[in-house]
Length: 116
Image (cartoon, rainbow, N blue to C red; front, side):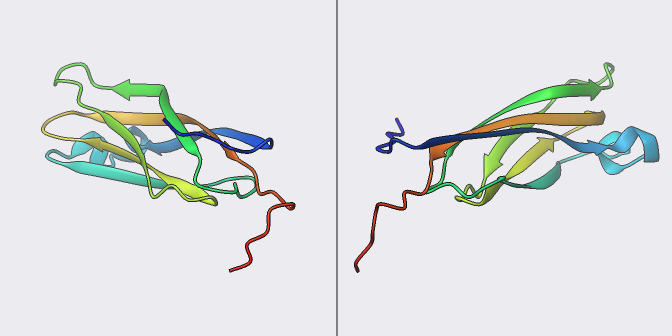
């Protein structure tokens, strides 16, 4: 559990199109094997510490012939932002993915000083 010991809590959110490989025959649509796409997200304002980040797919457009294989995760979470990582593998064909995200964490506290 992430405990936030601050009276000032911030929430930032967004919706990001990660790719649209169907339109230009990109590797997520035409490729095979392990594939990965990474998108950097910057928060509107920095948090006071790395926030908790929640992701969901707000658009999933995949071919139905092969198995649907999709992995969505957040990594490199800092007070300034994070990376959204989408992975697929084998013969899955992914046309488009859009990811919705929400970050919740402490805001910087001007009253809190670090002396050393």
